[in-house]
Length: 460
Image: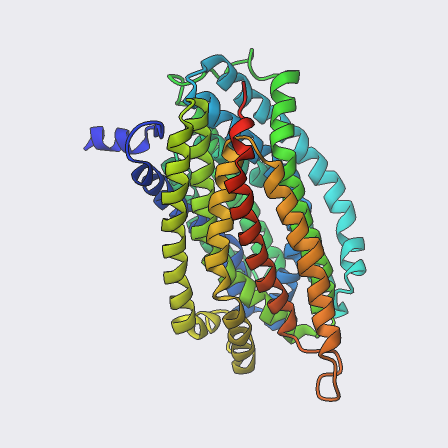
């Protein structure tokens, strides 16, 4: 039994064995882990929606785009770290692997301090800029302040779990997330139901749970001395490694920043339709978060797979794995889409007892459903390009589909559908614009993957 557990928790060398099997074995625990992570915000929404009210639900959801925008530093460092770790691990380069991990730890500390100070100061002005309704703006502000002050836990979990994934260890991150998610659920109920802390309670519960998951990741890395060294010599900034982390990570951070800014711009449009539509949008995005998890999981698995094999110089193996992994992602998304269409209304009912809100949310979800298949292509092939070191191409595709397609379409379609019956335009146009941007993104990603620039961008 102990031998089996050791094998289960051991880093996976994805440069040997069947590509589809490597990808699947790596993806499944990471998918479960991503589901656990998604539970953070989802449980927050369920608890406040049922025990505080629909306006509290709208407040937690309205805070999401600002939270995403102001943690892009963590996302960038995490992606850069994962790419470098996977390539050095594939190349069996212990010294550079050790230095990369040490640089990540230092960079994360600096980024955490920056977010704690700057993000807290910007919260209220951003909410006012987005025309957040007066009925929920105080809740939004306090919710975000607590999360930003406790952002070190979020930062270190995301970045150190990225390091673990780069080493081929997706099991440890899964276990730590499950522990943290269970703790989050318990604390949500204690703080909100027992102590009556409302929105502040769910924010505090999330911050504490994320801190615990970060500490567990640190503990796991300290146990992996057979792969790299984690001592004072490597816990310092080096120009080469820190610049490469930034170079590889910035495009992913910029991509997330662009997506978050687009969400903020569209959130302003969403807010104009009132509290009920804001709450419906929150519910749709929570279900959407779960529906997207297989795509994100396959995408991250493809990044690690491509990184290790590029590091080992096995480019034919990368191409073979890209094809097999993409087909698995498409098949999984097709199943998810069917389940949403069949059981979506029951899922919406978890968040609220308001029947009209459930119906509105389900109608919007039906518009997005088929788009998850397109996103399977985008995430899988983008993961391959990132793993090979080409983080710029996915960034440009994201910028075009978001800035040129999504935002103008959302505002344009809403404007064109104004009438006596719908003086502000039709609400569903916001989701139609998102669906169309996903389809355009999938076509562009497939085209640029075939052009093959990613073959020339590996670390040397």
